[in-house]
Image (tube, rainbow over all chains, first blue to last red):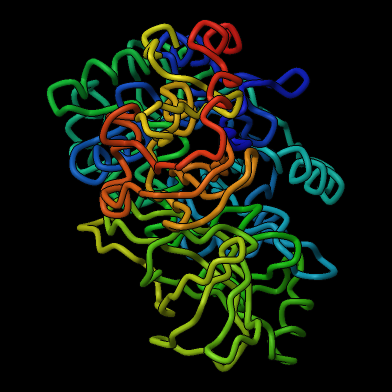
Length: 377
Length: 129
């Protein structure tokens, strides 16, 4: 047998590394490329399944410093960003963050999905996906009016996610604030240094994303490792992050959101401010909605043994192809294969389908995510 | 990787499988400690059927972990005489006991002498470094 591509230890040319890289190497983490960044997939003594369970039952910390950071600053920065991205920033007030999408203006395909921190009318902090940061920054710079400046701050900050039922205890142990509503943030102090604390996450569990300055990240990581020890917390790699987010049905850009998949198809209308005068892709999105007939995202729960993977074809009972898997994994909680898939119209919840897993037929049921019920997010 | 074990009484392949001589022309096949470590948590194993005829190098099954899928290759020519049915319900045995309860299948080999053509433990370990 030959270990698959994700485990191949060779590196692409000049991979970028996180400020916590030395910590990961010291822990013996398995590293892999994520959007041009060499990041941990899993840690020895943990492994995806144990790390996943730690987050569902206790607490885990994730280095997500590969995520992009960019600052939009200048008079009217909030209005400018709101005229570019899909969600309606006016639904929230500072200091609050919001999930939004950057669409291709011509096709309404998703260039990136990202978090926008509403700091003030004149300042918005963005956290795009690693691989898309340069493009989002380029698009904003090209569109920005005079007086608004967009700065790529990818390596100015690290990001550490603390996730799980015990996340508040761990964050509080560092003296950082935990009295935050979902998606609210505060700039707090830790050992005299600024750390942004956002109540958010990508696992479905209670959690926080901490944004220290790049050089402060290692000490913060060490403090979190110590603080989570009484709760049997684990450092978690991006493998567990993927199984956790898939169980919740959260989309991953590059899989479930791409330039070929619009928010209409991904059922992400909740993150589109349709009442806004303008955002990139608004007309294309409306045209597609009016025309109808596009595929929609569904969940698939495997009823046989096997694991759906992205790009596997989905067939109906007669064997006709009705769609394609966009993300698939083994759910560590359910111990069943789960998938997100784009399926033709006419499919409904409870339908029996077959997933073609490398020539093997895996029976599955059409469901609405999330696959796993969690206490709170 | 230094804490991974490679028993000296087994033969190995460059595809990270081990082969154990069970006597009377039967060999048992599994994956090495290196393989299970590289795969990570194994969550699904697809094995050949009893009675299947395989040739050396044939893809005859799959091992799937939380993060990747890998083919199993028949190390020798022969007929599948037994499979480890425990792996259906407990694929994690591949990680916890790769040389014991995590075995995969048994072959009645066409040419018992062919076993000597596989790597011995020193040659296999050398191939890993």
